[in-house]
Image (cartoon, rainbow, N blue to C red):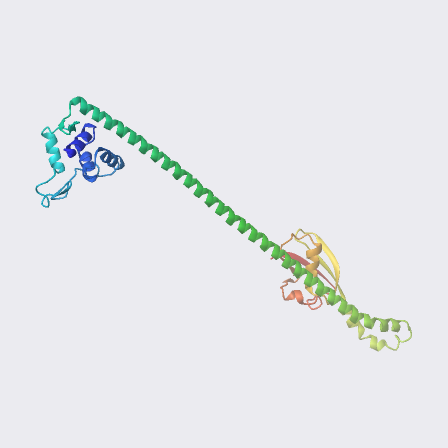
Length: 307
């Protein structure tokens, strides 16, 4: 009778027979509340409206061959009983059972409907709370992802700034080394030529020796043609020019440093020098060669070009 009560109650509440039968079978006929909970949890199942087919030989509460004397009705028997006019029963105070009146049945249906509405409201509230929690979690994950991206961007910017500082420092040190090398070369030349200077002045103080040394004076003219200095004119990237004088033995790198310091070349702009006539682009190896060896004495015109 308990099966009939649960199944018929679900049918009277408006549930489809297939759904009601599945609810009773899947809850083990635990009662109307369990059956309603199962229906609300599985109302969106794709096979919820398919006819319920119980396993062969199985009945609710046990197998027919194992307990033949206490065999319980299957869902098919339940449906037949409902069709044959089976009715619900209610237990009286003295422990007896009597059929429920129509008024009592209506009251029971009302209670069950109210219970169903309450459970549906609880489920909707629970679903709303779950949605709110999911949205909060999604926002937290979005914020964490944004923070990770910002940190990676900051790290990249920091690395780039450090790299630029290192490059500037290396360029500064390279310029300093070139300047120091030029200064050493000048000091060495000053000491070398300074030692030969006094004899020449002493010789010039005696006007008579030059006449007998006229044959020997034929040798110096080639040395004078070699020149000790070179006047270099440099045409910059914007078309302007700068001009200065270098020692003939100074390396071409000295001209390059002079352009870097005194020219209007943008900082960090890499450039090279070339000779227009005849056209010749100077390489890094040429930078260490003296101006005299490169044929830039006694004067020359150089052009600054981008690499």
